[in-house]
Length: 128
Image (cartoon, rainbow, N blue to C red):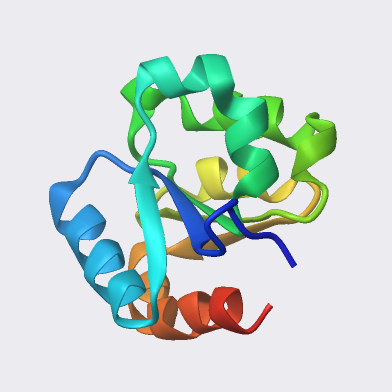
């Protein structure tokens, strides 16, 4: 079980859509879990952040954030072994979905599946 020094759980968000950030943050707060939207400056400290994160949520449609490059880099970190990565993408982006599914330990959902399953995904963090 991962926890930050203060005992709280952490979900990292590589998401630029403010509606999704808000949905996730509100749902996470309801179960007592903290979220952190990753910024470019966080990427310098990503190994430590991944080491204390319970879950990473990635919007594959946020191309300017280079989500596939991010997943590739995080997947190779020794601190990422116990960190679950859940990606979501528009249902019409089959090629992008297939590329992301090739990374070990990555779950890929359509945007609608992500919204439908969000509560369960977050509950998994609370229970781990």
